Amino acid sequence: QSALTQPPSASGSPGQSVTISCTGTSSDIGYYNYVSWYQQHPGKAPKVMIYEVNKRPSGVPDRFSGSKSGNTASLTVSGLQAEDEADYYCSSFAGRNTGVFGGGTKLTVL
Amino acid sequence: QVQLVQSGAEVKKPGASVKVSCKASGYSFTSYCMHWVRQAPGQGLEWMAIINPSGGSTSYAQKFQGRVTVTWDTSTSTVYMDLSSLRSDDTAVYFCARDRFRFWSGYFDSWGQGTLVTVSS
Image (cartoon, each protein chain N blue to C red):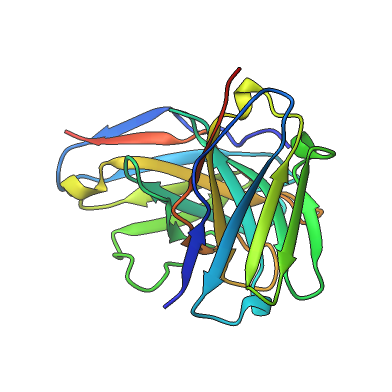
């Protein structure tokens, strides 16, 4: 159960789009469609932004979208806004009723 | 509305154990799985365990096998996470999080406020 691999940082200007990758293995992301993305602001609990690869919970702006190809999942934030600046974490089911998170990506809105 | 209220901060010595509670309200307690996730200072999220309160089945991350035990009390709608043989690198904020489904879906739709556990001699 090694952590999923995310880039430590990403950035974009307001209005631009940014994509964050999350690489796992054929035993987690590559095999299951239970990939989620979480947004965490400093000192706060995480908030789910995407679940089951590309589904958005009610209330999450459609600027947030998810996808998956092979062992890599991606989160795209379109039309960047200042409030999108936060840490983002991916997670995946890893079999045997266990799961794993990515190391996190700090998104900076320039 | 759904609420998860965790117990307060703890300071423990190396080798000791800690028990963190998570009291749920606003929904049918036995209808959803509960997870434990921790976050060391300045670090990322780490999945630890899941419990299905309907039946009590549990699963643990391999890293914590033998050191963590998750239990539940349906009479008080409370889930407990017990971590033993504490080390300094167990210092972290521990969160409980409800899974939106009756299985490991990754859709953690409600989170507790977090409990800081500090391990220091």
